[in-house]
Amino acid sequence: MDEAILGILVAPIILFMIFIAPIWLILHYRSKRHINKGLSQEEQASLHELAEKAESMSERVKTLEAILDSESPEWRNRA
Image (cartoon, rainbow, N blue to C red; front, side, top):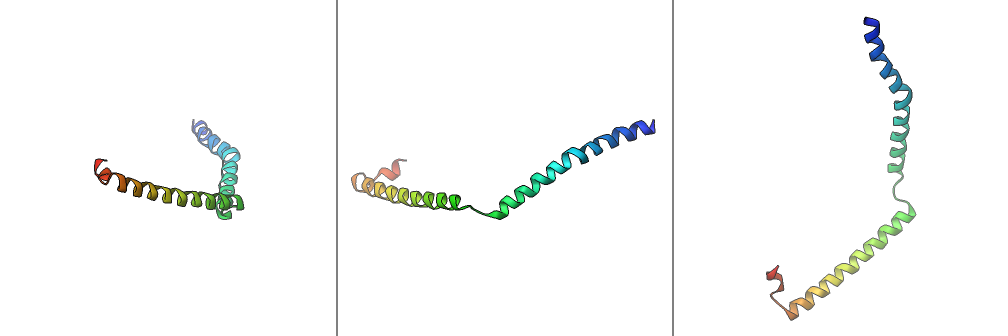
């Protein structure tokens, strides 16, 4: 009876160590290496482009708010 219980407990542990643990370690260290690598040139260019677009949109919003302030001074109080 004790051998059956021991077999039931040891078999999953052995299967875990053979199949799951190596895959887990490989994926873990691959993700660590990817995180430490930083941004690639393409990602930096994309980030810079998005920052420029955000700045442009910010200027457009300021312009639209100025137009609305001149045409309808109470527009901010309505929202």
